[in-house]
Amino acid sequence: MTSTDTVIRGPVKKARPEPVTRTVTRRSTAGKDLGSVDLEPSIFGLEPNRAVLHQVVTAQLAAIRAGTQSTKTRAQVRGGGAKPFAQKGTGRARQGSSRSPSMSGGGVALGPKPRSYRQHTPKKMVRLALLSALSDRAANQRVALVDEWGWDGPKTKDAVATLRNLKITGTVLVVLADDETIAGRSFANLPDAHTTSFGQLSAHDVLRSDWILFSDRTLPGSAEAPAATEMVATEPASEAAAADTGAEAAADTETETEEATTDA
Image 1: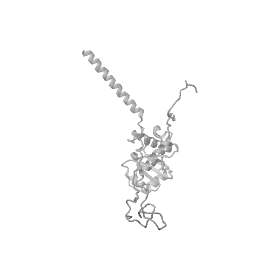
Image 2: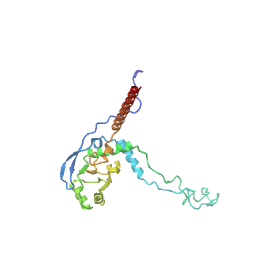
Image 3: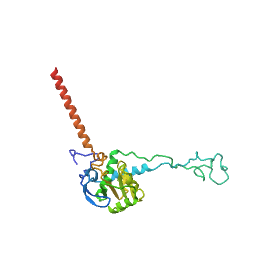
Image 4: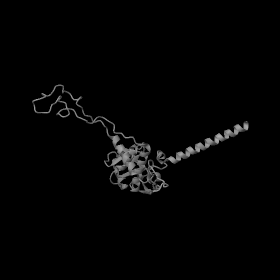
């Protein structure tokens, strides 16, 4: 290496492939094929970021921990005010209290105390982890879509029949809207089925299930899912909006300057 060579210092940004478009077969609860639907590439077509997935899922599992375990120190254990035995002549190690951690019934040294296991995770990492989990399920063809539930009342046999008609085996995560209570109660008694709302969907919920089942109202990127606009929104769009706002402000300033010059 010569003195004229350029040395690149710091992390080098990894070039990731462009999002790909994947499709899912849209079916009814009876298993009838209703055609195919293109999934949103920015949600279901990304390359999963395994490092971010691991960090976010670890933080989500840590947040579940109660952290209420507690042990008593030698100062909190009752008794131990008197010296248990004589200082000399017993052949044993000298002791000043029967509540010492080295004695039976004594306190616990360096034991667990109530604490919080929560980890701070940036919102962008949480979003990227969720999109990576959804893209992984879409790449493995583990995403199912129904048009609507159409059940008159909560019945477990309707939920079982739907999963059988859709040929879903193993564990499944059913994403429901807030007002789809009938479907939620229908899946409640199935041990291999878990339900969640669109707003509470997390990377851990997606990865712990073999399948993820959407409806037309909850599929991210669809026109019928109002909350999907938050997932599709990207940083360049906001930057473009800010640039447009700055351009308008500059134009207004130039207009005011020209009017002031004319009046003068």
